[in-house]
Length: 328
Ligand code: NAI
Image (cartoon, rainbow, N blue to C red; front, side, top):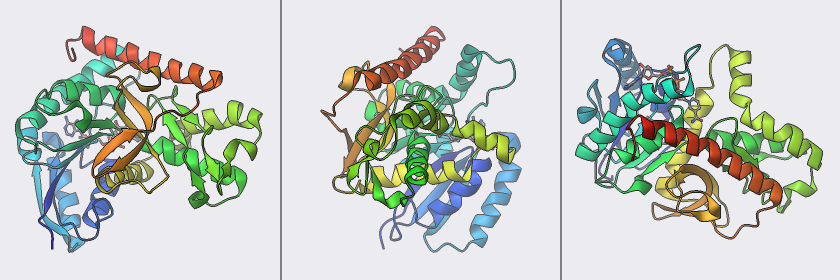
């Protein structure tokens, strides 16, 4: 049996946590041969509820779950963590401006970045799920100067999975027949779900659907799916978000299949003209725990416009948090 690895999860008593923790304990994220120690962070008032979740985790009798630690102190929860899933965040409240939201989240992600910098494994892989995910990831990253910037990522995988499922539904083909969709940019309504390189059963996706549907219906359906779920369910997408977080971390840890890519929010290196440093959704492949941006994809004028608009939103978010002194 392998040595156990430490997996930190913040916001662990929340909705996403309630799906996520059981999947990690079952080995869905790191493999059925990888024991884990869960290190769960919550705010002090939620520790009682978290304790109930821990009772259920123990009652799952998961063979791979070696131990569970809970704390309201990031210095405890992140100690020696090899994986950190930052789920807990400050939700947007009625009447809140973007600057207020970013500032409130800065109060969470700055100290968490500092704590990761101080105590996490030097190889920690960080996934930010809590919204606004891309800019929260930037804040955590910029406050962890001893870790590599590439260790901080944001989740666009739920959008990626939604992009696959919407195309599957439209074409009547199984999701397994669909490859190489891309989510460019921000996990927000400006994201660009791109089918220009996608295939269905090995054939170009855009030859199988009409362009009008793609441009005027598909893109906004994927981008606004979160709101549609809130409208239908009365609360936000949690199980599918947890599943996407599992997919993101699994592919980062264990690699992507040959000839296929996935979408991850990662620090831009300037590829495709995206300003360097922004945490932006890119098509990536992963080998030996390291991701690389898929290069030299053709970019049409239509794509260029959409990719630029979502970059612009991220620039504005970055400038707001810069004004607040949260990033350089
Ligand atoms: P939730 O409100 O049910 O749970 C959030 C939990 O975080 C709460 O238990 C809260 O006590 C905790 N928390 C707040 N501040 C904390 C801190 N400083 N340290 C530790 N824990 C803290 O929310 P839910 O549904 O679990 O969603 C969590 C986040 O994920 C939200 O920001 C949501 O917008 C985001 N999200 C992101 C998605 C993505 O695709 N990137 C998809 C779906 C949700």
